[in-house]
Image 1 (cartoon, one colour):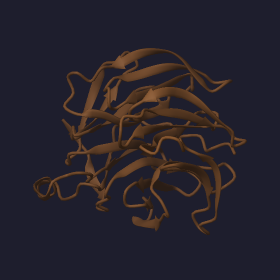
Image 2 (cartoon, helix red, strand yellow):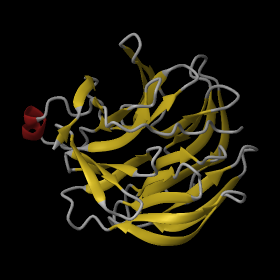
Image 3 (cartoon, helix red, strand yellow):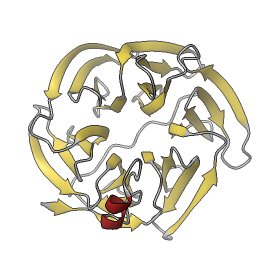
Image 4 (cartoon, one colour):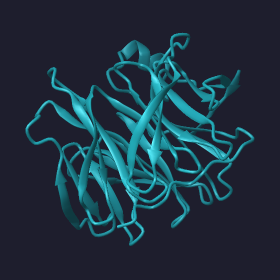
Amino acid sequence: MERAELLVDCRNHHGEGVFWNPADSRLWWTDIHGKRLWWHEPATGRSDSIPMRDRVCCFAPRQSGGFIVAFAQEIAFLDPVTGDMQSLHSFEPGKPGTRMNDGRTDRQGRLVAGGMRESGEVDSSVIRVDADGSVTTLLDGIGCANSICFTPDGRNMYFTDSFVGDVWAFAYDIERGVPGERRLLNDFETEPGIPDGSCVDAEGALWNAEWDGRRVIRILPDGTIDRVVEVPVLRPTCCAFGGENLDVLFITTSRLDMTEAQLTADPTSGGVFSFRPGVVGVVDAPFAG
């Protein structure tokens, strides 16, 4: 089995939402429950974090500068330097037991992000945020949205409801930004963990971080798992290709709800790990607004 190595020993409470930003040559991710945005510069080895007023569940760079941010209950534009924020959308205000969770931009620069049931039994949804700030609901009845990412040509959207465990591939209308017919990619029945965050490589394969599985797997378009990368902590959460040549796979992890015994066994839980898989990735499009 191949193995990822520790890159940043940041020990996030719940690291997530990792992406590479070509605009500043930095790797960015969020510590959701730590309420901080983190960055790492591979060229210098420097890392730092920025405190947030609320939990950031996923985010993406904007074409016009700054970030679009999915806070727990709100979508907003954020300038990470000044802290200036412009609210766009209140997420599910009638559902106090839900929050935002996972999301990425599609190839046209629209943010597709989904929520989760954090408490209670009320389901959440997946929304699309267009460049003009308008919001459209794409999917309903979601327990925990994860694995949202898009094939290199943008014509398929990968998705999982982690509470169910199946990974799906939706046909994706790139003109209208709407998922259509879906097919089962992999049911995870033979996997030790639960499907969490994902990204794709330039060959069209899906890389998925397995919560409670100590691994990241590569799933081919036909659903076959052809690579397994060991992550030496219990809870990998998300992955993204980055580096100047997009040839490094970066992996966030979590310490959420781990016992003292588990943390003693895996003290670097919550760190960021890296691995060179021998294939290159596809950088996410910046949000078009």
